Length: 194
Image (cartoon, rainbow, N blue to C red):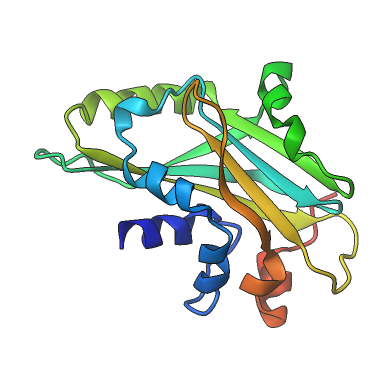
């Protein structure tokens, strides 16, 4: 159940309905579910934490729309949560080099890191949560469009890096059209601000 809840929140692009969760689950590699279910707070390096998202041309993350939500599990003294951290664009070549194999024609890769303030918040959370038996982490990307998207599929891929061990796929080629109804699409994926 923890994996299902975690995966359902991974792609905060939208609020997913029960019907859409099958589409989400089918795009999550089994190795990711295993990796996330055994994640501990101590394994997260605030300075190395990154979220990368591959979006079709015409879609892009909204300003302040890339977030990581962390909860600590198994702690006797409560660490209030969830803790929502907002990420900022990462432009260092060291962030994009490991992602070259994920680049595809007709898409753009966006990479985000914790702000200095949120990296400090995460360090404080880690100190307060020392001794917790696990952590759940969810990466969410709210998108907007720069040009009309038509009716074709909109495959998105989201990757996470929690430390120096590299990126891993959270969801691969998840078609937004399978998880957002036509009626809700304009509200969930609005036009980008000029």
